[in-house]
Amino acid sequence: MCLGVPGKVIEVRGDGVAVVEFSNGVRIETDANTIEGIRPGDLVVVHAGIIIAKLREEEIEEWASTIKGFIEELEAKETELLRMLEEIEGG
Amino acid sequence: MAGNDRALVMKLRDLINKTAEGLEGTVKIMDFCGTHEHSIVYNGIRSLMPGNVELVAGPGCPVCITPAHYVDAMIKLALDGVRAYTYGDTYLLPGSEPPGSSKPRTLADAKALGADVVVVYSLLEAIKHYKRDPKESVFLAVGFETTAPSTASAVVNKLLPEGFTLINVHRLTPPIMRYTFEKHRNAPIRGVIAPGHVSTIVGARAWEFIPREYGIPTVVAGFEASDVMQAILYILLMLKAGKPKLVNQYRRAVTWEGNVRAQKLLDECCEVVDASWRGLGFVPNSGLAFRERYRWADAIYQYGLKEVSEREWKYDLPPGCRCAEVTLGLAKPTDCPLFLKVCKPGVPYGPCMVSSEGACHIWARFGGGGLVEEVVASLGLE
Picture 1 (cartoon, rainbow over the protein chains, first blue to last red):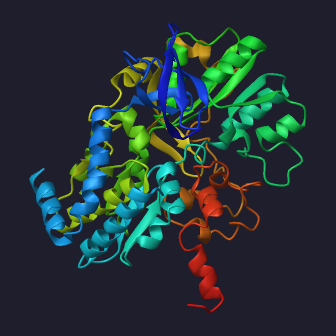
Picture 2: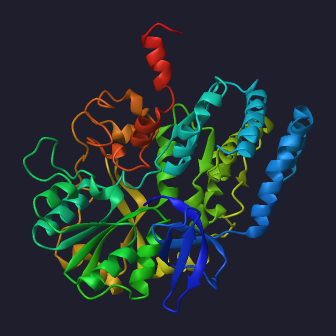
Picture 3: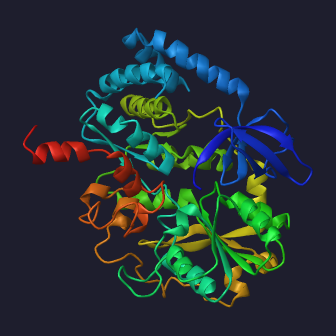
């Protein structure tokens, strides 16, 4: 129950119910009342049968590229450490 | 762990080790979400930590802290002929009856005695089941801010059919964090991995008080191994810089303000009250109770059951069980003499062994932090 699972919205019904498909192909009916303007194709997090968040695709892309970039960047460990420290100190 | 994530985790391990050098004393970092603890144990993250960094599981499992008297109430209603809907996580959760009692201790025991107990994944599923086969029913609504919106949505949007009520045991995480920090005063928590899923609802801003009031670096983190490792690195960097802040590492799902629509639903449906936590007692402003206008949905009210007051509250863990200390991160599951001896996932003795989010259950399944080392040491193989 206490587990957030990412999935894709397949269908949105008028009664506040959205059908979400998970990566293993399982489809379930979810309560979509907590998200405004939900649409088929949206990536969401489902928790105990309710959609708790819509994933922000631009952030996912950024995250993916960060991971890819991180591996290369972190080769220069000292430089990266200093950059992160500066970011934290500045932010 | 997928290839890219693994490579990143290894890089992060090097950075974490480098950053931890020179930090004084033990750096105790606490996670407040069962799924984070799962990720830490499943991915062996504790084994990647330097000697001076200790990862501790905090109160991150709502099933573990669901007070026994609510389970008792559900069992009683079920035995009286009311259908009991429960999440799978709470099906084996013990009530007040001691182990070995001839009376039913769990909803599973009640079902074995012929009670109508139905396990569901969600409240929506329970409602659907009810519509197919209507019968006076009660749903055991447990959970933190992540699960509470499903209750609020069903109540406020009037999705509950006639004769379908709920026992509301929803609890809030920021108040239990404050409570936990106090309990660790002697060996303070120096970093917090804030719960990612709870944060999708309450927003990153909910944790802003931690660095401000307690001076503890806090990172809202996702659940991949690299997410958790990044969170640990950020905490260590902030400690090194002497600048505790709040960082949102889980930006792909968590915004600063959170899910405002869900927050409004919760506020419309429930008021914040002092509430009991299993093994711990009452924690100020840590629970949600139905507002008076929604009492038609409240099984405690509808069936004339008695809410337990702070004065009436009794310690509700079975004898010898150390779940209260495990919940607060004051003991490890392996510190409990019952762990994997009389308390096992199939036959849980204490509540932390019940849910897949409970620290004891996670450690039992994946041999969490230190178990292997203990066996190696006991065999003299170090």
